[in-house]
Image 1 (cartoon, rainbow, N blue to C red):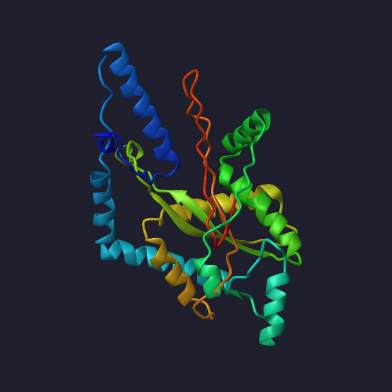
Image 2 (cartoon, rainbow, N blue to C red):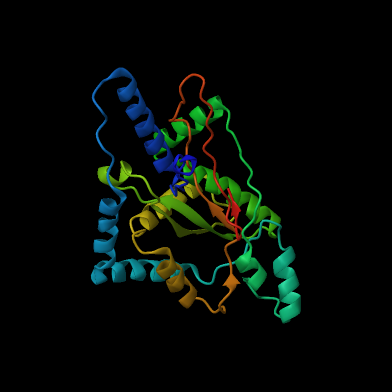
Length: 277
């Protein structure tokens, strides 16, 4: 019957999985159309997930990750809320709490349930992107570090020239060939924070951010909820107290070119609780 002709389904995948999925789909289509050999099968998501189950069951490894984040946060001290609208919200809460030194803002129930946000898409000019990428290669830094440094400089400016800027960084954890050739979602949030005086040079700041990024990535097997609990336990703020106003990620989208006559756009979705760069 007609009711059996269509099967509704939903796909949950990260940026890397989008390209893997469409490349595999087009390769299968080409094989069927031309009668050539079918592409190698993708890694099953269940198989790839076994790695996470094994890692999370390793108590010694997980405790090592927790120790790293605890020391990382303790060395930096209590974090500071550098909001995307400047000091407006923090100053209002300082007045309400009669505490001029308050460094966090409170997330109410409406914020926790909020699931809508505007998404701004910035398309870099090809020449500018090439120059930025060449700079990264020549100086052994990451593109994410450059983007983060630009955004944190702006946040510092509009927050009374704050030296302490804290964001969440959305990263993919596709560190093996098997997982890179798999669908599904292997994304996690990790803390990305820096404290710079106005005297620091661009290159020194960039190298320090890249170093921090690399260190955090090596400990990103710790689930996000456990990671942020470690950070929260190291600060004197109540449940719902928040110091991260933004979430940042870098996902280049130039690797997939649809066939002639096809139109396709792979976009991102912003979380209601964060400004998504």
